Image (cartoon, rainbow, N blue to C red; front, top):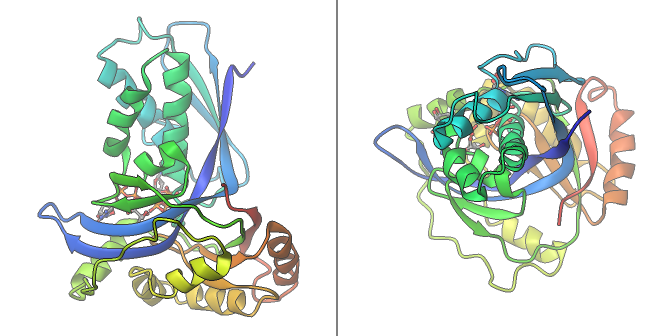
Length: 298
Ligand SMILES: C[C@](O)(CO)[C@H](O)COP(=O)(O)OP(=O)(O)OC[C@H]1O[C@@H](n2ccc(N)nc2=O)[C@H](O)[C@@H]1O
Ligand SMILES: Nc1ncnc2c1ncn2[C@@H]1O[C@H](COP(=O)(O)OP(=O)(O)OP(=O)(O)O)[C@@H](O)[C@H]1O
C-alpha cells in the first residue's frame, strides 16, 4: 500500500529570455514559471526489506521510459542518499511508482517535476530536513529547484535563483503537444550556433502583481520565448500548433513553453479552456496531438 503520494505538476514557462551564457556552456535565463493542474503521479511505499530503491512506471507516457538508474526518480533517491551520506542499510529502501501522464521531453519539465516529487516524498519517508531536498535539487537538473516548490516563480541564473512571483490572476490553460520529443540541449545548441542572445533591457515585475488576465497578457506581450524560433526550425509542426491555438474560441494568449514542443494557451477561466479544448479535439490537424485543459495552480 502506498504510504505517500504526490502530484508532479507540469511547469510552464510563460516567457523565457536567454540573457547570457556561462563558461560551462549553461545559459542564463529570466523566466516566469507557473504550474498547471496537469501532472504525473508519484507514490511511495516501503519495500519491507533492506534492498535497493525500486521504480515501476505505468500510464499513457510510460512507453520508452526506463525504470532504471537513468530515471530522474531513482536519480533523486540516489542523490538524497548520497547527500545524507547514509548506506542502504540505514535508510529503508523505497518502492516508488510513477504514473506518467505528461509527454516526455516536451518543455513542461515532466522529468524534473518527477524528480522534485520524489525528493518531497523521500524526505518525508526518511525524516530528513527539507533543506536536504533543496540542496540536492539543482544537481538533478536546472528545472528541479522550481519544481520542488510548484508555485509561480521567477527563475533566473541557470534556473537556481528563484523569487516567488507576484500575485497572478485566476486563469485557465490548454497544453498541446504534437507528439514530437524535443531535446533541451539540442535547442540551446541551435540558439548558441546562431549567436544566440538577444540584448534586452532588464525586466521588472510589478510588485503588486497582475490583478487581471488583461494586465498579465499586456506584460507577456513585452516578453518572448527565445527558444521558440529555434524549436520551430527543428520541428515546424510547433508553428502549426501555435496557429491552431490562436484561433480557438475565447483564447487570450498562446506561446511555446520551455524548449518545446508543448505550447500553451491562456483563457479567462478553466471552463473556457475546457470548452476550447473540445473544439480543438474536433479539428483534423490536432486529432492525434496530446492535449490537456484546466486550471493554472494558484
Ligand atoms: C529550458 C528550461 O526548461 C526552462 O525552464 C530549463 O532551462 C531546462 O531545464 P532542464 O531540462 O532541467 O535542464 P538540464 O537537464 O539541467 O539541462 C539540459 C541541457 O540544457 C542546456 N541548458 C539547460 C539549462 C540552462 N539554463 N542552460 C542550458 O544551456 C544544457 O545544454 C544542459 O546540458
Ligand atoms: N521520470 C522521467 N520523466 C521524463 N523524462 C525522464 C524521466 N527520467 C529521465 N528522463 C529523461 O529526461 C529527459 C528530459 O525529459 P523531460 O520530460 O523532463 O523534458 P522536458 O519536458 O523538455 O524538460 P524541461 O522543460 O525541463 O526542459 C528525457 O529525454 C528522458 O529520457
